[in-house]
Image (cartoon, rainbow, N blue to C red; front, side, top):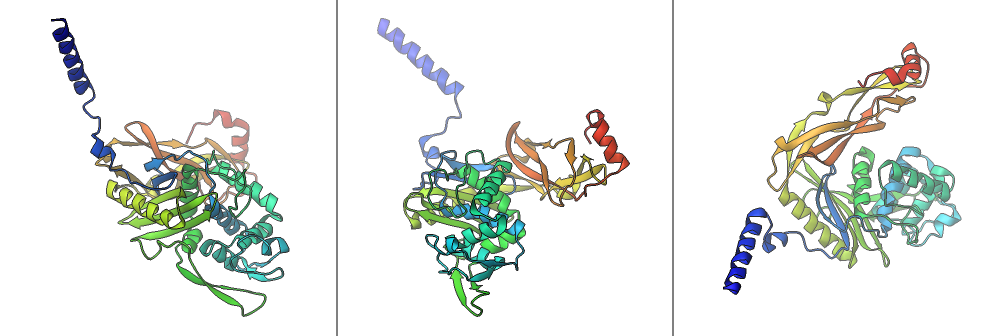
Length: 387
């Protein structure tokens, strides 16, 4: 009787557990996740950054030439596209300078950026860094400053090209943040979506080389839009890949795939999984979400801010858009000058009350100056209501 009593208790306990946890997935459902060789990976919906899949996404790895996404962004922001750039001895002697440029050669910034992003030329990255900031060290400082602004908390850059260095590291999650921001820039998108293009020398005049993008998925994966490959023996196979289908754009990051070929196979699996699992529900047009903030020290006392794109809702695995809510993460007062398109805050998307993504808020231009309104903001700002 004692044994029967124990069995009855165990049976009751098992019944209770089955009732208390009815939603535990079966093993077959757990196996639906993509099988990849990469040590770390993530897939996000591009407009909001909502995570669809992740594997060791906060684990630090060498990013290899995915680093050049940051170098490209800063070069586009600081250099004139037709500005001539002299190849220094340091740039010419950089490991894996695939364009085979020589010290004294001259390129426009546009040509160097194309060579850096398509065939991953390491010397071009050094030359762009020197032209942009005066020295590689100063440029690296700007890279780390930008990483901090983008919330890349587990990233540190030591060079502009991704060559292996103990203090040069990132994570799949941080690389996705960088890729998302970069793909919001039209000039950047146009470069990384290019499958093949000429790179022309300004000096010696007439020298030209056709270069093919190292991203083998361009033209071979439906909807592929970029972004950047990476490979070193220490980093393994790295790839930031983006694709867009029916208005839904995904960004996949893989780090430390087993072989150069495996990074493309891994990215295919991740993107396939993302497109199968995710739908994009049309939300609110960007022009319906304008807000204002106070401006201190400007020619105007307020400035309009708006999302950088429409706010749509990624739905994963049959979710319902009615579960989404929005909040604004925006300062009450900003300081002039304000550049047109300057990111000053974000709309945070919540699903069932949990923050799952965001859309950047950009301001219109306000020059520094004096006005009665901005003077009032400077003196009585603490009294002003949030607009």
